[in-house]
Image 1: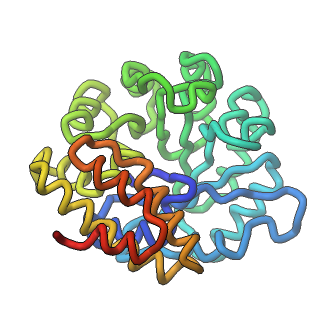
Image 2 (image 1 turned 90 degrees about the horizontal axis):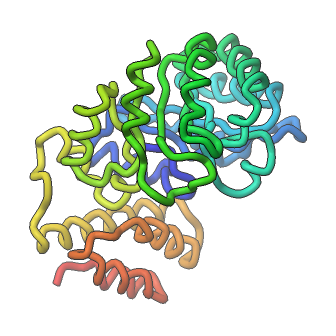
Amino acid sequence: MLAPMQGLTNRALRGLFIERVRPDVVFTEFVRVKASTKKNITENDRREVVSTVAGVPLVVQLIGTDTEALLAAAGTVQELGAAHLNINLGCPYGRMTSQTAGGALLREPFALARMLEALRREIRGSFSVKVRSGFDDPAQIFSLLTLFADSGIDFLVVHPRTVKQLYSGAADHGITGEVVRQTPLPVIANGDIFSAAIGQRVLAETGAAGLMLGRGAIADPLLFERLRGRCPGESTAAGKVDELREYLQELLARYQALFCGEHQILCKMKEVLCHVHDPEVLPLARQLKRSKSLAQFRELTADN
């Protein structure tokens, strides 16, 4: 699965991933559900939730504070054609942790149970949850497993860090493995899967039903194919540079069709580069992040 990543997994990037490496499942960025307005999701989000490509299932991820608003949003996105919904119970950023939404919902398990049960009655297709291992206690998830199973969700995506950790420390997939052993639900492992070797080890050690790739895939879309054994586990240094150039050239063309203005397009491209840390491509990534114009960016991605 391609993870939901705010600011990144828009329909242009998802389309590129589907064309190049065909993830089994892709997710939208989280759709922020507003409780204060009748039209509680934005026009852009309405376009995002119907952009299924080439038969690859698209999961619409919702995040919000109010059960009634979430129910209305679930109804709206299903009317627009969404077949698969997910609730974000892990977002560690911004307003979503100061209100009862995202990762903050883990602090209110009774309200969470009522919310999930109500949503399950509203959602006609598959319904899943993406969750951190706890708000500030990494063992909290074990007290929630019965709640999740009883709510009728179809699968669980586990990122084994706490909300408070953000992305510090390491994802503890020992927790993922224990979750797999303690719940009847299919579990998807997420977090710190940066190479095929890591992904294969996580699958073998946890018994998870699958993997969700986030930052590792944004840095290297071929990670999907490496895990399937259709590409080398690691490319040569020169191959990595060529792969990055080709990826960015294709993504730039799609971003120019989706976004408005040179500044916005350049910023969106640089957001992708923030996830590129391989030392063999880091010099190119740093040059690209210093680009002052799209012309300069294009020149740097051109073959030498």
